[in-house]
Length: 73
Image (cartoon, rainbow, N blue to C red; front, side, top):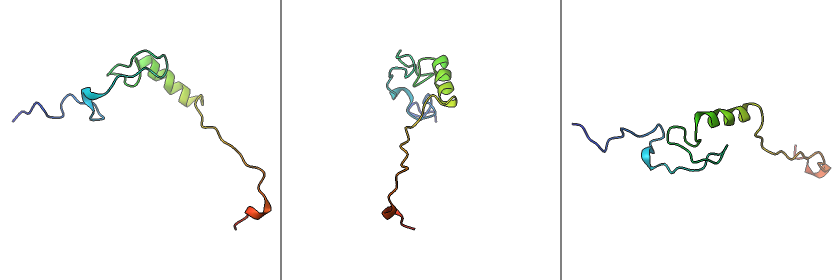
């Protein structure tokens, strides 16, 4: 009852070999299937360090000038 079209060999995403290789977001080398989307474990750790140290952020626009007519409470 062995079926070769089974999900064996597919990654945890279920995409398996169909995943397109793209440039690594850290160093721009081609990514590897083992470390996707990075080219190596080192680049994955560099990216994790950037996230944890606050290197990546979402720009915030603060509005301090609220007119009195905008109060809806």
